[in-house]
Amino acid sequence: MAEELKKSYFEVLGLCCASEVALVERILKQLNGVQEISVILPTKTVVVHHTHVISDVTIVEALNKVRLEATVRPQEQSNFQNKWPAPSTMFSGLFLALSFLKYVYHPLEWLALVAVIVGLPTLILRSIASIRNLTLNINILVLMAVIGTLALQDYWEAGTVVFLFSIAQWLETRASYKAMATMSSLTSMAPQKAIIAETGEHVDVNAVEMNTVLAVKAGDVIPIDGIVVEGKCEVDEKMLTGESFPVTKELDSTVWAGTINLNGYISVKTTALAKDSFVSRMAKLVEESHNKKSRAQRFIDNCAKYYIPAVMLIAAAFAVIPAALRLPNEDYWFHLAIVVLVSTCPCALILSTPVVNFCALSKAATTGLLVKGGDYLEILAKVKTVAFDKTGTITKGEFVVTNFQVISDDVSLNALLYWVSSIESKSSHPMAAALVEYGRQHLIEPKPENVEDFQNFPGEGVFGKIGGKDICIGNRRIRSRAGCAAEIEFQNMEGKTNGYIYCGATLVGTFSLSDTCRSGAMEAVEELKSLGIKCVMLTGDNHAAAMLAQDQVQI
Image: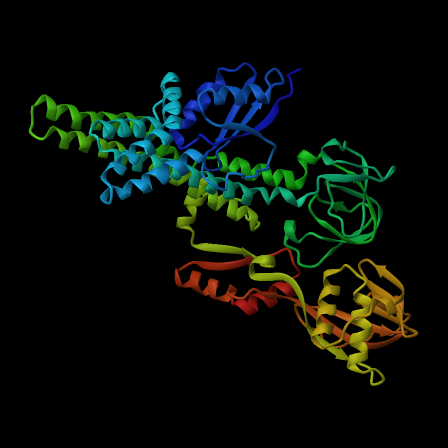
């Protein structure tokens, strides 16, 4: 039986561009127990699949021998602490700035040399490590440029190169952490703790085995995929399915990790491990998409293997050939060779494509769009039709009251709003929040303390006693709870959720709620149409709600 592999994440701040990926792979492949290596360059992350023969500490030590500044990072977590550049970078910049005062006091020009001395050690150590591993990268190019500039006794330019290179690496690291933070928000949907139904014990979700019965209380996020074995509730699946309205879950219903139990208590029998849950599979898909290089990225990576040696040969030619031919002004040609080294550093070329791909993939994931890889991003340039998800994209994903009216002459509008907002304030349903907010807009403040015998009926509505009156609020099915035998019809608000209010067995009011379109949605659709792109809408919502959204944005 094959030994189980462990998946470890490492932050490698010394990674600059794709030319250093080969260095990381060469180092790690020599280690016993390492099976697979994946480098996510934009976030300076190295993912290693390895056996338990080798520890995370050993891997970190191997990377740090070549000054790659590696540390172990818990999976999908990232905490950027270096809000300020390293002290050596800041002192290098300070001395470089003070060297400008040479125009006031000439000896201060030597402070530029101090700026070089302060900022150069890290660059030297990384260059030596790269040479030992037979790898050419940007550190060697910059070091050669600095040495050449010092040979020309142009200390101010040497200090400028050292400082700008150091500050650029710091800025790149900050950008990498921000990109990783965007991606990490995807995995924070599911909780890290679960409650065992039998004992009430709180345990880590990764320790929960298959077929374990978990307790999920009202308001809690479901921790692991499973099947309801007891209880009934309504679940908000908006983040996963796009369904704007809560879905009723009862015996034998399937629930997914990351969705929210809005009301009621349910017992869930797990059908997957935490690492195999729906949310985890989403995160894995995003991670895999980052590792799948686009056609353009693969082309640039192949060019990078020959690019740096070619640059060094060209720079050497500028320095050696004029000297061999004894052309005049040798310093000019030597200086030109240094300019070639600095100006042709490959980071901008090599890093631009993966950074763009990473940012696009991560941003898309946080908005609910999963792209398989960079190749598919490039295909977007050829797209002629765009399909939009409705909930949360075309619409806000939030309920608002669009109609509220009194049916009975014996009840005033303010009294009806007071009953509804007070009773609904005791419910966690998103529709309840919309009704309470509607009451406040009409200067009616809810008083939940005046509500007695509050009851919640998942999939139907709520009941409460207020002012000695029995009030039922909900959909058509709440009629039977209220004891009303007659089916009362009123004008249907197409595309909206209709609600009914009963006082005893008498229908006294109705209301409608809808998920309104985002501001700017119509403008976005019109802009795409002006580019010759056809727009269509996809939704898991009901047909009437889809038609209402279609009419609003003319999609």
